Image: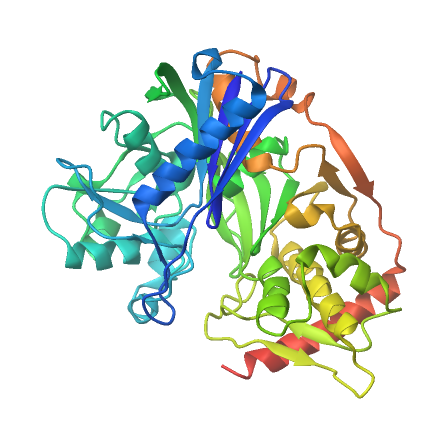
Amino acid sequence: MLLGIDQGTTGTTCLVLDEELRTQGRGYREVAQHYPRPGWVEQDPNELWESALAAAGDALEDAGAAAADLTAIGITNQRETTIVWNRASGEPAHRAIVWQDRRTAERCKELPADLIRDRTGLVPDPYFSATKLEWILSEASGDLAFGTVDSWLIWKLTGGAVHATDVSNASRTLLLDLTTLDWDNELLELFGVPRSVLPQIVDSSGTIGEAEIFGALVPIAGAAGDQQAALFGQACFERGQAKATFGTGAFLLANSGSERSRPQDGVVETVAWRLGSEEPVYAVEGSVFVTGAALQWLRDALGLLVDPAESEALARSVEDNGGVYFVPALAGLGSPHWVPEARGLISGISGGTRREHLVRAALEAAAFQTRDVVDALPFELQTLRADGGAAGNEFLMQLLADLTRLPVEVPEERETTALGAAALAGLAVGLWHDTAELAGLWRSAARYEPELPEEEADRLLAEWRVAVKRALLLR
């Protein structure tokens, strides 16, 4: 059996899977977020660790298994969240600074955008790790170690014996040369980061260290950032295959093969994974900051929903959106705009507007934003696979197919991040020969074909983009 640990922003999910990648047990524990100032988002690293351990225990219990039954462990994680700890004590030097945190926005405006884009494939934005690390290092002292959440969990599971990060997580720091796949000296100097604090960069699939968990010793054999793990778990192993994960936000990753694609501004390049001695696989990525969070806002701030799960029925209860468009720039706009100062906008309200129209507009916004990312990609997509909680929303999935003009496939197991981490680990320990064998294990639960006439999809998109232009004027 395999254990996949997915340490996410709002909680930790663990899956116990068999050799057919069928889920035998699952566990989940929430984690708290702290907001010490407007725009600042932090978490307790020890709580992240404890949630992973507790969720793993729950998953094993649910599977009726013991840790000794595990063949390997795979880890995936919220990516850019930054942790610094003391090597001697193992205690955090500061709370983790979460990927959503905006405290370094002014610093990012000072950075050489062209250098960063060329070297890392990314853009200078507080979203990524380097300016967070720079900020913590200005506040902390001692013999320090830095890592994204994968590094922290590996350190804790191995009792401090291994300080490592996989290449996909390293590619999200603004410190990795995307061509050499090594820490870049010029960027380290730019951010004032000594090499001594950095983790070793390892393959996404390969033995990283030995975890001591619940009295058993189990190899940690897979690690990847959550979106890359989902791409792997969705069996998107060929160039042009893509997945979209819908949660708080939405992240679309498309496999771009073994060569850098250097896309236009608005989407970024990243490492998808590196499997042992094979060439690295790259991806292009569009990050939509707010999708599911828009429904949460309608629930918590406006009281228009009791539960986001009722959004589908509410959206279907009206014939159309009534001319209402919701640009959910509650945390700025991500891809393909990258305007962190953008403000949200609801347009087209009339005397006939009902709460159902607002809920429908929030769901439609998730599909519109995904289509905008698809249009910004440097190549055409072959397939689009969807996962995350909203992949169960049939209204949204059908609209996604209608707007992207692509078949949209939803997998049997929608927790593809944890599944992907486990698959990376299983591949490393020889449960399967190659990714072709893994692709045969991917199982579809639903498939959506475009049904809306293309001219109607184009009309909706045109009206959506007018609303976006209006929102961009508000910054």
